[in-house]
Length: 123
Image 1: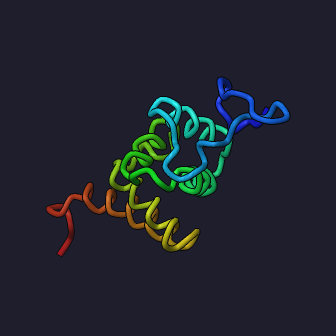
Image 2: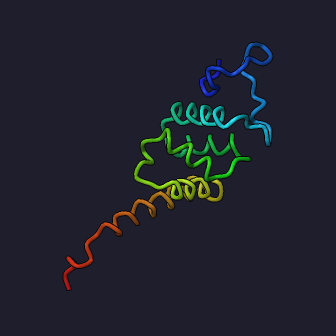
């Protein structure tokens, strides 16, 4: 059985899991979507690769929903908001690895700037 298919996926031809959910507009119930996204996120350790796989297999869903689901399973996104995670998905879609890296750097850098103490700066 495919490790990225949910354990309760019904078998298709030749005993393999049914992959009809990959067709546009046929993602299944929200519980099924979250289970699949969880399987992908837990099965792919690299953040970019996991997000790319989720985005590629769930293109018809709104990015905000996909971002919220990914955040549930990726501890390396705990320091980012759902909106930041959605921006990473958009960066992957538009700019690939380079776009992803640029947005990730800028989002994590902006938190450090906001936490700085402006009154402690020397003149």
